[in-house]
Amino acid sequence: MPPHLPLRDPAFVQNPYPTLERLREETPMFHDAALNKTVVLRYDDISGMLRDKRFGRTLTHLYSRDELGWPPPDPAQAQFDAFNGNHMLDSEGEKHTRLRSLVGKAFTPRRVETLQPRIEAMLEGRLHALGHRFDLVADYAEPLPVTVIAELLGVPEAERANLRPWSAAIVKLYEPNYTAAQQAEAERAVQDFSALIRRLADERRAVPRDDLITALVQVEEAGERLSLSELTDTCILLLNAGHEASVNGLSAGVLALLRQPEHWEALVQAAQQDDSLNIFRTAIEELLRYDTPLPMFERYALEDLDWKGVPLKVGDKVALLYASGNRDSRRFDTPDTLRLARDPNPHLTFGLGRHYCIGAPLARLELALSLRALVRHVPGLRLAEPDALPEYEGGFVIRGLKRLKVRV
Ligand code: HEM
Image 1 (tube, helix red, strand yellow):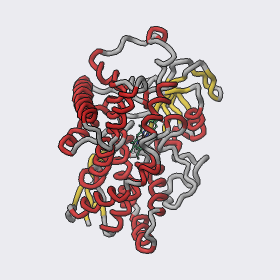
Image 2 (cartoon, protein in one colour):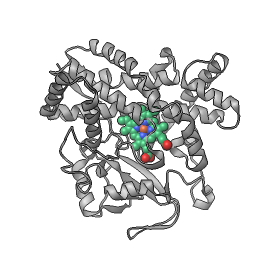
Image 3 (cartoon, helix red, strand yellow):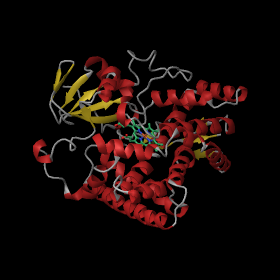
Image 4 (cartoon, protein in one colour):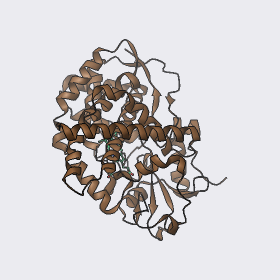
């Protein structure tokens, strides 16, 4: 049987690493006929392509759909396509640079660091509300990133309940083979999400505040640099990207630690001896490498090219398995071993090149603070059902635990 990536196989979603290792060693770059993509598994190839200008996240800045021979857009997902065509993650060239530099001003490492006391206060409140048994995903990992990104943008508390369900509906369409019902739900979510942001933008125009929506409204009002739809879609992107992977990354990290309790115990000991955040910052890097919350991203070949003997034509898609690169023994010593002090740790979890995660400093801070607070507050944390297989949401592109039952 020709090699393929079993993206919809629940056993693969549970634990993709053995399959990724076999593919990485036997067929490091292969064409998956079902996906119609070239799958790329080795670190050097993935990082090389991410840095190479001949690959991009979109093609429509260079060619029309007719030139590409693409079918007309699907009217059933017009809102979703318009949203995706308009934010930085799916833009290239001048538009990407412009949108990224506007948002980049709000995400300076200095601005992010000022959030530490506020994040610590939120974590404190959350920890005191936990019982002896709880769901680490819903009760601990989820609330913080959603609240932080909502506060940064300036989404009032009363409007936040929908952010997570809307985001969950939208990201379903990033998985292959979604259903018509999922498509309809994502359309509705983009529509409702946009209506909220437009309303908030109007409010900020009337009464400015110290938040990102106000900052973007002021850019939009100042001239041509940001259209209203770009503003709306940028905010939706930030609200989605600003929590999905952080929730999944923390949950997966804690699962890895509780499955190998000697590592959890080592952090408990270290936290007693050393007050600094650094050991947790380093541990988070390793946890994000070891189990990668966003395991796969794609690029188009922007021109006909040859990659180490593999011909790619303009419009061909490559599926870059960041989760596989992160376990490549050509780049990492003992890649299947969790080594919390691993340094340097040049993992691919935040990407590389011009789309490198703009929220990485925020994610790193949130995750390190969350892990330190958990270790300090509940040093005796255990899996409540150590023999049960963890339950995943089902997607691979955005791979996350559905729940993680723990006890103190
Ligand atoms: C553990 C948490 C996170 C992970 C693993 C993660 C991962 C990534 C990755 C891999 C990319 C690049 C995608 C590609 O290569 O095609 C990316 C881009 C991006 N991320 Fe994150 N991210 C995280 C948290 C955040 C947060 C907290 C924010 C909120 C500010 C954010 C906002 C973005 C944005 C806006 C982009 C697009 C950048 C661009 O296209 O230039 N991410 N992220």
